[in-house]
Image (cartoon, rainbow, N blue to C red; front, side):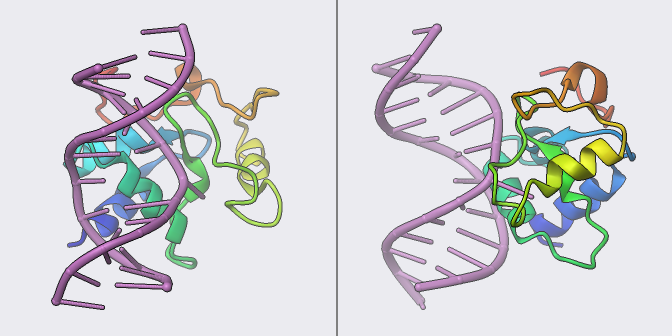
Length: 106
DNA sequence: ATTTTGACAAAAA
DNA sequence: ATTTTTGCCAAAA
């Protein structure tokens, strides 16, 4: 299985209304340093594969740069639709929404 | 086939 | 504290 597939599989485990960081997924995927690759995986975001790429945020709860998701801030809208509060800085409160995927509080 | 690049993050300077 | 390198894997060139 490719690294991407693993990442997608993990992303699918993220509960609704919860978020995970790129680094977190990389860690869970077996390569703690491959956070960047996770970004690549999310970027390709296989449409129709049921991968909630909008629930993956940066280490600081930062959302993907504007326009990278789509014409508009779809990520923000999708997250808000799930009940995730977004700060004016376009960030999410990781302390509250971070997914408990057996992470050890890096 | 090889080189470049990217929705990141952490270590080194 | 901030700025620069390094690591990582797959896709696109």
